[in-house]
Image 1: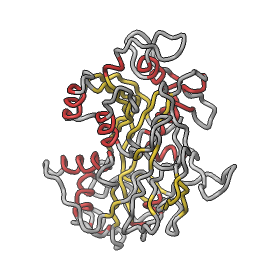
Image 2: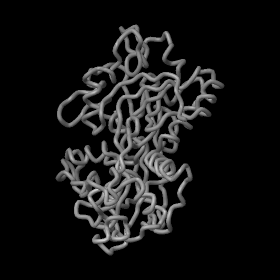
Image 3: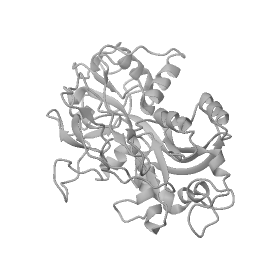
Image 4: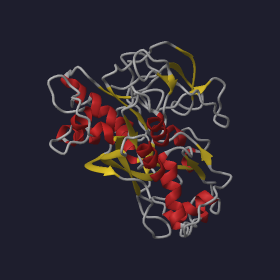
Length: 387
């Protein structure tokens, strides 16, 4: 059950999907989960995979909540509206964005708190949720918890953060549908582009006949899983030395095609992007937010992945993020049944069960991971950490 936008969003002048502002916030605009609902927060990249698992997709495939059980699976989105866009305060500009910090009610009868917008924020939030009544049951994540996260979980008396992988999500570089970029870009070429060594397309090795236009490299915020994975890949290919981003690199929204299509020179813009999210865009799921109910036409992303031959002859850049859910191991071993009439706790019902098949492992759950653009692949990882 997705938590919806808490404020009114207006379309910015630059592009449909690039900049939004919000002012008034209404009380109790979203469904406020009950004390016995299972509530998840966390990263933006895996949010639709869990959302679809909870509530189904637009093709009629049913999510867990379709069974009309007493207790619900609630996935609170990282983004402020259901088209995957963040919200900005009034008078924001592309060069000087002002984060709105939208809020959400995690449980009925509690006050609003800042919406959790990233994988790292999700880990921080669940580790801080140490009260006798939990507000957060699980987190969505595109990367594994750190060793320090696991130490905190142990110190909290939970045993550890239990990790279940529900699928994977390729990470590639995208450009506008009509672009001056070559068909593909290698990791070595991306190092030169993002360091500012290659400023124009025709400066790329093997691309002397390319456009003389200036390259416009874009990157998601430093808090995003895509930023971290992308820069880690460039560091590894740079002999283990982290690159210093060039002065021409611009920070933009994660997984927002409007960052490319609304750029000052769309044909020269590139950005690392979730291919799962691009798949969801290409499915026609997102519709024009400027049209009142019952809604407008499906939006087209206007971007494509650069998966062809790179000018230097090397393979195009390609990596993979995991689609994870994490929860307290103490919840996994709880003897308290979740749904009336069942003997299984909520972890066993939804995510991890050594004596059965939880929902996200079932064909129906895995099909919904795929419907949201991811590559299905269930794997109960247990006690693991990054690095």
